[in-house]
Image (cartoon, rainbow, N blue to C red):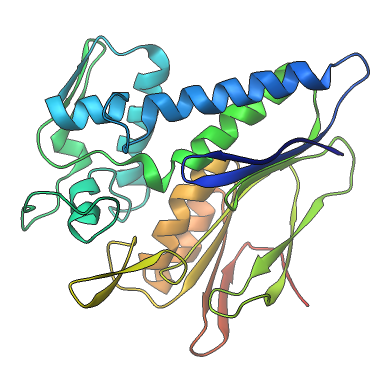
Length: 286
């Protein structure tokens, strides 16, 4: 494989894309298409840009005549609330900002969290936000990973690895899967084991990596209580990204059912006790 992108900055992280290009496919042309897709996606869906579709919706509370790609992304985000048993909520942007994530200048938030089922209204003609603030951060990188994978396949590229800050999709055209290492959530340069990645998405999440101080408290980006790290394999990178949050918050008894219902491989690691829970997750210890 060769690098098509190496540490390309977007969506608050670095992007790497490796691929084996078929004969006749120009490296420069594919590189240009990939970078164009990434920058366009960021311009449309970053919640940190006031001129993005997300910025306009959060400010004006309505997006009129959204295009099909926009409708698909917002409907996907809405459906995640039901698919994750209410643990993934795309309308908690104000809560995160009030806790110091981003510029920390949000107004006071309501005591009850908004519901994507009732407070995000999507029709062919408009997207309306009744309350809350739309935040694609919990699935956006995975969503873009899948869009990049679709682009590569449309150019005849069958073997590739896309890595957007740890949200990944790996594809191979032979029987040999890609091997990725699972990073320990609290110990630097330590790995828990490996997992095989073949035509699947992967994501990890924990409350330990993305932390900050706010009013004397240590805060993180997970809305809920957890002291674990999650690792998820899924048919798509967007599902892996979103369900990595759900795996942190759902009771252990629900994780096997979730994995079977959604076709996932899930693992949850508790660093305090050095214990793993897995369901359909082909983990190999080191």
